[in-house]
Length: 122
Image (cartoon, helix red, strand yellow):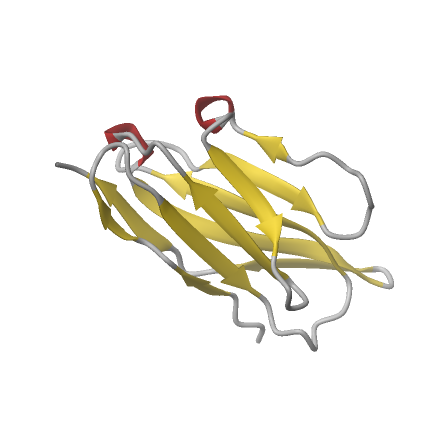
């Protein structure tokens, strides 16, 4: 099985910042897109940010509620992305999940992490 490693969650005060990291083993070939989703208690999982790893110049996608505050970016290592979260609000709290997708020939890849919890509270 493929392990999706997530880290960086924790407790932060409103207005503070956190950086989440997601990494898929570099031996995995064909990862095209990596996403961050989040889920709060009683709510459906929602897309936070998406980055295309294969198409140069493709714009990243952000959920409306985080535009201007969150930034997704590639790490130096293969299959690694960061989510920089600034100006955090209590409603940003929840479990953040990393999703990596792509293709190996005709085989579709769809890998999920276990989640990392973010709590925004004073």
